[in-house]
Amino acid sequence: MRHYNIPFFIPELGCPHQCVFCDQHRISGTPKVPRPKELSSQVEAYLATFPDGEKQVEIAFFGGNFTGLLPEEQEAYLAATTPWLRDGKVQGIRLSTRPDYISRENLELLKRFGVSSIELGAQSMDEEVLRLSGRGHTARQVEEAASLILAHGFRLGLQMMTGLPGDTKEKTLFTARRIVELGAVETRIYPTLVIEGTHLAKLYREGSYEPLNLEETVERCKHLVLIFEQHKVKILRLGLHPSEGLINGNDLLAGPFHSALKEVVETAIWGELFREAYAQWQGTSVCIRVSPKALNAAIGHHASNRKWLEQVFKKVNFNADPALKGREYRADPC
Ligand code: SF4
Image 1 (cartoon, helix red, strand yellow):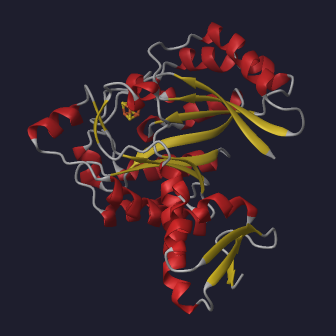
Image 2 (cartoon, helix red, strand yellow):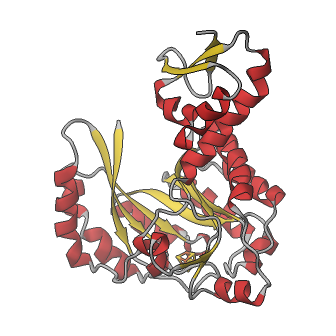
Image 3 (cartoon, rainbow, N blue to C red):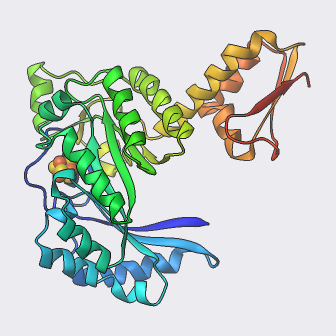
């Protein structure tokens, strides 16, 4: 069943402070926080764009610390979504929040208003990385919050970052493994970018923070994708959604930004599979079959996997084969 989010960005609303890497206004390109009474017209506008047929729709509050709002403010936002939940046009509410703002009382409030999915910004499960990133919470708090969320029957998402101050490849992979162990069924992976106006921008200018380059980022993300894939944790997003300010403006000071990062990472994973195997492939031509879903990724971003194989084989074909799934492929002479 297709899933649709109707997103509302509430930049840094409810945040106790600004984490060193964060400026949600610039990241989301949303200068203004929507008020509860403004939700109605946007929900209707989104619903009108969704195709007929069976679908799962969630109204989503992103970009802030939802449970850091006063209970009456949370209730005002959630109550504004009730008409669509009641008439079945929307099946649930999704929100992102901080691990240190999860309590039994608050989870009960969210439950009452039909919240279905909670995404926690874990960012790292390494204490030093959390401290250097100014998160203001510990890994233990992520664990406790995750367990409370699951115990209350919500769908759990844990978001993570790579390349934060003090982070290493090992710490990044450790974080991913802990996310799996903590029972998340969804994740988002964000490579750290240096956004103008943040504390990280100051550290970068002083020379005390160096972002990852794109190659290192792709290398780390390749492993993350494989870990999450293996454990059936759905990756909802890999890399920041490219807002106008990030692509064309002055918001991005440094860091491994790529508007199609997921594609680049997928290309690298498929490229590695082919590089490990091509020496055993017989003949001067090769016809590679992959699942229909994987076809574009196997061919590669800007057809880079195909172009590389064309340097080795006289003829290279890629075809979709519905009998294959995931990372399965067949390589035969054409
Ligand atoms: S990272 Fe999350 S908690 Fe930190 S300032 Fe940004 S929105 Fe708030």
